[in-house]
Length: 344
Image (cartoon, rainbow, N blue to C red; front, side, top):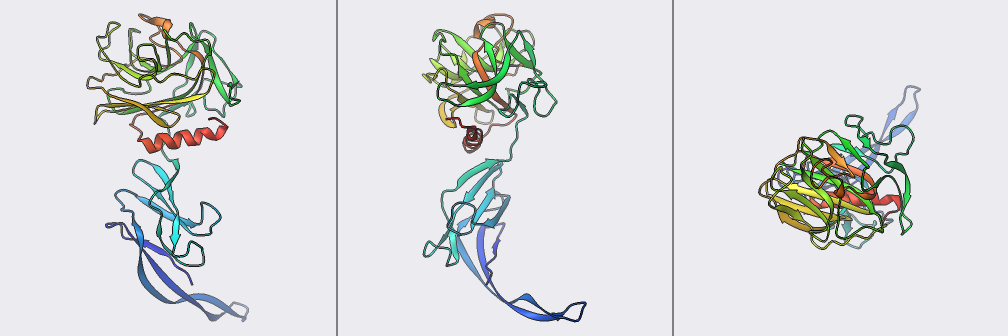
C-alpha cells in the first residue's frame, strides 16, 4: 500500500490518497513471464492537519523521514523568503506503523536558498592565492596597510579563517556593496581584541560615501551606545546631527568569535541588530541615505573625522551583504549554518 500526498495550491490543504497495489503478468522480449506492480485501486482523499498555501510556500515536498530515527515521513517547505523548513509528520500512535495524519505545528529551520550579494573572508578560505577576493569574483577587496589572513582561534577554542586588523592603519575596501536607502543586510563574524578601550569606536563593516566624510551605515562597537550596534547618521556629513541605531548596552565578549548582523527594512523604516542569531536591539530610521563610495571591512570613514580612530582592532570573517532585509528566521538560519564550524 502506498500513500502519496497532494496539495490544493489555493487552500493549502494536504490530502492523502491510498493506492492499493497488485501485479499483472507481462511477457518480456525473451518470452519470459514477468510480474509488474500496478495500482489496483485509489481511495481518499483523507485530509491531513496543516495548511501550506502556494502563496506562502511556493515549493513543498517529502523525501520520507528526514529528521530523526522515527521512520515517519516529514514535509519540507520553501517559503517566499527562501527559508527551507522541515515539518515532522505525526501519526495516531506516534510510530511509523500507521499512516501520517498531519504535521507538527512548529517547523525546524534547516537552511536558506538566499545567497549574499557579496561575500568575503569565508571560513573555508585560506591565505593562499587572494584571501581578499569575494567568492563570486566580481567585487574583490583591496587591503590598505598590512592586514593579515590566517586561522584565528578564540579564547573559547573556536577557530576561523579570518583577516586580522591593527585598529589603526589596516582595513579592506571593495566597491559599493549595498544601497542603504533601501532594504539591506550586512553580516560578519568578529573577534574584538581583549584589550579594547570601551571609550572607542570600532567598525567591522561600513558603506562609505565618496569623500570619506561619513558612512551611511556602520556595524560596529559604539561607545555612544555602549556596545555592538547598527548605526546610521542622518546626513552625509562629518557633523551629522543625529544617529539612528539598533542596539544598546550590547557589551562585547572580547577575544570570542561573535556573529553580528544588521538589517534595515525601508518599508517599515526599522533597523534590527542580531547577535549570534538572536535579536539584540531595534530602532527606527526615517532618514536613510546611501554612501556611493567603497564598502569597508575593518575600517571606518578612512579620511575625515573620525578617520581611523574607528577602525577595527581584531579579526573579521564571513562577511556577507544582501540587498534585502533578511527576516529573523533567515538570520537564525545563517547563524546555524555558519556555526557548524565549531563556533558558539
